[in-house]
Length: 117
Image (cartoon, rainbow, N blue to C red; front, side):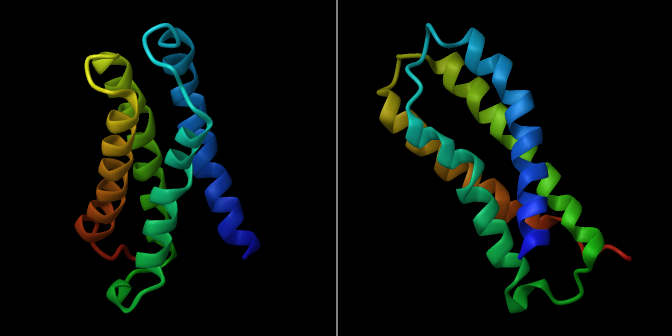
């Protein structure tokens, strides 16, 4: 469990460092809500559940690098949200982007083949 938390900290750290400038400079275009922090947690949980499922046959510790790819999607979602601005209802846009992040986590799991250790 501690290892999983460490992996999540690395995932969240990379995502936060890359997202921070986007959030800071886009703060006038978007009203960021606290629940948007779920972007750092929910996709990771989906990826972990898939890694723990019978679908992960053949995957090894080397596949833990997939979490890095999931963390790169978070700042991309923040950038899209700033680009869209208030053209779309902010709650709807945030929800769509959270769903897109979850789909990205699942796609990363299924696209990355089992890597040798």
